[in-house]
Image (cartoon, rainbow, N blue to C red):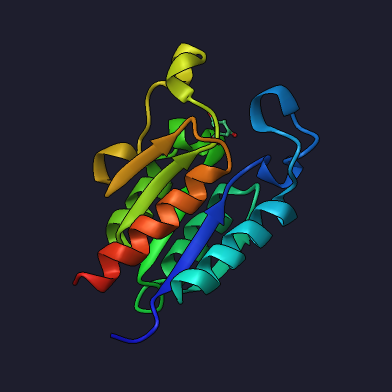
Length: 148
Ligand code: DQA
């Protein structure tokens, strides 16, 4: 198999990591997160690409662009997780396996965060492991792709 291509998408407000509610999301920035993921990707010998947007349509566009290019998506859709049929439809449409990621344990938080439009079509869901969740997801995605 060729080197797997994994797309990491972060949704709204995740550009504010490090300063946004640090008691929930920690003090590391999006740049720090991307550096951690890149280091893990090098170890696992997979390619990663990063995308962050605060706009639902831009996320839909990026998912559509990934069709036929990315082998797997790691997606923290932020608040759109709980609201977006459009992002769910885009994911179903491109038929790329994905893991849903949340830094916080959404099930311990407000009721409106307990429902996800994405979980029902995700390969897996990781929440409550902080930034490590992305690294666990990356490891699993790499293993899954290599086993196919
Ligand atoms: C989040 C949880 C969401 O409920 C929230 O809207 C976010 C971040 C998380 O990573 O824990 O923006 O996806």
